[in-house]
Image 1 (cartoon, rainbow, N blue to C red):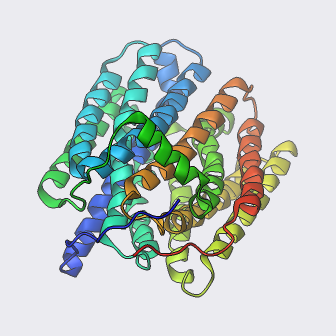
Image 2 (image 1 turned 180 degrees about the vertical axis):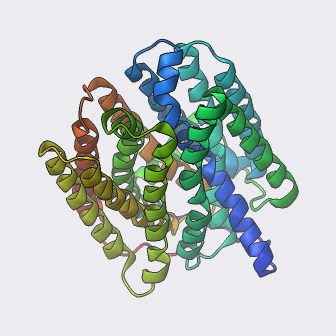
Image 3 (image 1 turned 135 degrees about the horizontal axis):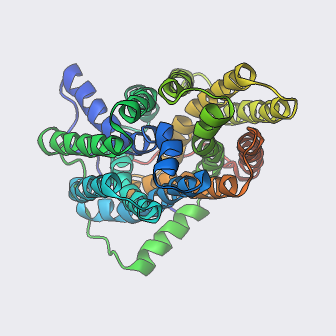
Amino acid sequence: MKPMTEARATFAPTSRWRHWELIFILAMLTAFGSVSIDMYLPAMSAIARDLHVAPHVIANTMASFFLGFALGQAVFGPIADRFGRKPPLYAGIFIYIAACMACALTKSADVLVVARLVQALAACAGGVTSRAAVRDLFSPAEMPRIFAAIMLVFGVAPMVAPFIGGYLLVWFGWRAIFWTQAAFGALALVAVFFRLEESHGGAHRPLHPFVIIRDYVLLLRDRRFIGFALPAALSNGGMFAYLTGCSHVFIDIFHVPPQHFGWFFGVNALGLISAAQLPARLMGRIDGARLFFGAQSAQMLVGLVLVASTLLGGGLWVIAPLLFLFVALNGAIMPTASALAMRPFAMNAGMASALLGTLPFGLGVVAAAILGKLPATTALPMTSVMAGCTVVAVLSSTLLAPAKPAQTAT
């Protein structure tokens, strides 16, 4: 697939303050998924008890969220390329707020599953728009640094959200978590309306389903894109296995109090943020593809050690440091993959951004579904799925690696 090109947006940050304000807003949009997942994790066991269902039924709300986030990005990508970045973003945030309210008011686990699906469909507008706006506003050479900066700010969400969710659960009950998510959506809407300028005026591109499918197929056949996007998605599948299972492992198996769960989750998020800064510092001195493969290989090794430790009966203080390393390595993998995969694509940055989000969340559905079927009396189901994802990721990276470095679009 030949990269489609266009002139970059004329808007650019005019001061250091404006630069970081833009980074903050883009990070806020990226954080919709994290806020929706991480704030909710400490409450999963309590929700199951309150709605009188088994824990694996509430685990289905994670699977439905991953499914919605995967499907929604595939839809928002071409819409953002056709109509510009802000109109679909407005629609997504409005629907997100309504879905949060539905989650807060529900008395049925089945309704919660559906409401979380809709919440995810809407939330993904933020991530698609944010990644596409980076491609609109910054040169390919700047992109790794910008993605790292967004990760630095965005990383506050997975650090703080579990603490907020845990204490909201203890003080006000689990429904307050969803009211807080609705308030976050309202705050983002205000920031977008007043402080985010349109970075892409739209293009006269048909939205016929067959045309959209054709364009996605062309992207999937382009090794400059898929050679980084698919292996990164598989690595991220291990992260989704961690997200789905960690609440049960820490709280139910290792008996960590819900309000203290955030300490473990937050430390891991700190590792992810710190590692995410490495690509921006190293990609000028080390080939990006080599850095990407090295981080994946290291994550696979940690995943295999996690499985071995679980089989040998490792307790909380054995498993927790290994989980920290696993999550941290994912922080190095994803920004590197995003920069390398999107580098050749300008005019269709929205669709490329959508696929970068759709692939890992699609695999997240599979990981969550597998965990939902496995008896979770130990941490082995979670660690096994995590390790399995990394093994397949390294194999796919070896088989699909582009023959030469991605070419920069003009």
